[in-house]
Amino acid sequence: MSSKVYTREQVSRHASSDDLWIIIDAAVYDMSHFVDMHPGGAFPILEFAGKDATEAFYGLHRQEVLVKYQRYKIGTVDGEKPQIEIRQPGSLSKVPYAEASAWMGFKSAYFSESHLKFRTDLRALMDAFGPEIREIDMSGERPPDELVQRLGSLGILAANVGPGAYLTKYNVKLPCGIPPEKFDYFHELIMHEEVIRWGARGADDGIFAGMIITLPTVINYGSPALQDKIIPEVLAGRKRMALAITEPYVGSDVASLRTTAKKTPDGKYFIVNGVKKWITSGRWADYFSVAVRTDKGISMLLIERCEGLETKQIKTSYSASAGTAYVTFDNVKVPVENLLGEENKGFQVIMSNFNHERWMITACAIPTARLAVEDCFKWAMQRKVFNKRLVEQPVIRNKLASMIAKVESAQNWLENLTYQMNHMSYKEQSDKLAGPIALCKYYSTRMVHDISDEACQIFGGRAITQTGMGRYIEALQRTYKVFSIPGGSEEIMADLGVRQAMKKFPNNARL
Image 1 (cartoon, rainbow, N blue to C red):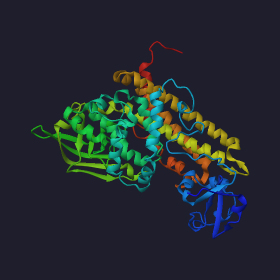
Image 2: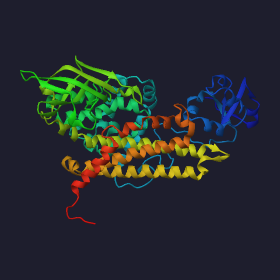
Image 3: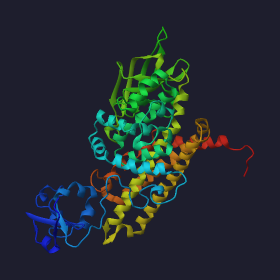
Image 4: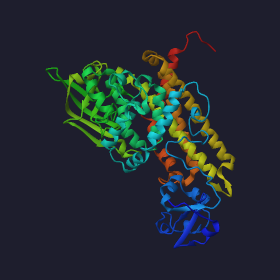
């Protein structure tokens, strides 16, 4: 890259369509060969030929565009220094409320030095994957095996599943040198937040979601033989998993599912018939944990992809790279050894996983909203309307205040619940946290709904455009329901939370 220095007067001499220079934040760019390729046409560049285009550029483009086209930079302006910071991969944002408070200089009762270092190291590691993941998300392609195995080798897959004795048992490597015995739910929380920063919800789910909600059924209820076979190969990225509970006619009403599993006369196999729908990562899965109806109740089976098991794409509001599938079972033969938990007691397996799944969804929903707040704050500070910055309008400041308050309250609630998870046994969590986690998920997904709506109003037409300044907001308003429906709809979560509280209500309490 050239390090030549030019005066503004020198730049002003290059103001024709075939000899066109512009200034952006004290840097000089030669646009002569780019002007005709500009996606927005030649006029917006010609208007600033030989002039300073900093304000106009940041009114039309995200900073990443400037980074992408650095090859057109030919020098700098004499005696001037850049006034705008170019975000470096791995850096933490300095925009107020763009990071959780522990990373904005505030004290925290929850996060230790281990957590602070983990975030810093992990940010740099995850940012390196961002462009590749976003490209997969846009294409709708299957996340490549090589990529998933790379994530596995770095311990990123395991860190998304969460803490547990299995990490030590299988000598699992975790990211950034965290010892398995030190890895806790705050480390996992940070992991989910950093995945969300990729801004690629479909690809994220195609890589992680199925594994996160399915592997625990094997970790906690699989036979030793199943565990020894499946856990290492899934955490290494060699195999993928999906949880198959929902059916075309059954969502939250799990007890009414219709997929059947009947034993063969010799008692060695189950024969499975039925269908499952909206199965995240189902198109890519090698293994399915499947809820089935057996002779006296509900059971859970681990079913390997085989003859009679077919998956078809379901088109949803987010990327096809999520692998959302319609799954059919046509006389699928499953060894009885693949039973997860006890026969006819599969409801326990299903319910035992819900607290962590709902916590995980909440842990993803909140940073999704936080990224929108950051984009909106930046936009309001740089966008000019009627010769004033957008942020100078009281109505915009009111919107930002509402958005910030909702994100921060959800974050603090989640951190409190995460602390409880770190210090409660599984039995105590089941007794005390089902209701609060359900209510936190309900509040957080409602919060994302509100923030998506406000963000659209702040960005205007850009918020309904898939590229450019508002691309993140457009993706948010198109996909945020991915948080509010899986793991239990908002209505179910709200009702569950109150019903759990009713169980704890003292009989002698009166107004």
